[in-house]
Image (tube, rainbow, N blue to C red; front, side, top):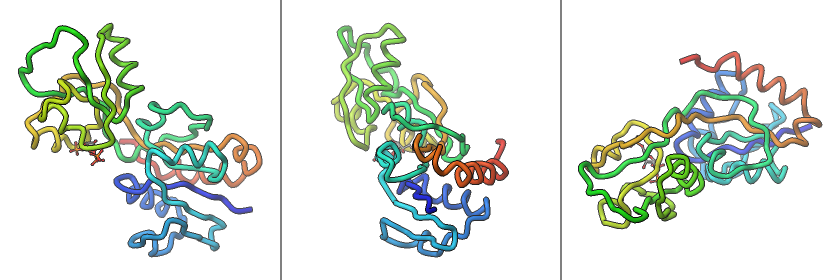
Length: 208
Ligand code: PRP
């Protein structure tokens, strides 16, 4: 039996590979410098697929990957039929509302730009504030600078992007870490393999 794992390309990737190696998985050097999208690791009976972070849960939900590593931000934005089995405690960051300092209040439905329209809608609804959500796919910090939106909802990690663009954090929405997610069918049919992985990862996950 082989296990297919969907890994998020980009920021989370390195930390996720480091965690798997710490848990004793022998991952080949291809993981460190390759453009390959599928990496087979026959020694571990594993196959890795490298997907865009926003797409990891899609592969897992459709069962073409048994497992995946996905940010909690993505899980909150798109409700998926997958199990979230472990907080990997890597790629710590938070979702926040940000904007220009001393921006003038707009009376009717101020605009909020974000990559997370569902998260942002829910947040402002809970706050009892009516806003207009504008969906962007990246470089969200540009929106208030160029006048597209008064505020943004985005991930803040080091805070550098906000600072270097003269923006300030206005509210903290939620802390975010990466999670191990599992396809519900795989969870039943490959339970031993998955339990073993959860156990090995749990043993090396930081408590910080
Ligand atoms: C993310 C996020 C912020 C930035 C925060 O963007 O959307 O822009 O990182 O990180 P910092 O607080 O450490 O500066 P990413 O680089 O993933 O690219 P994107 O703009 O395409 O979303």
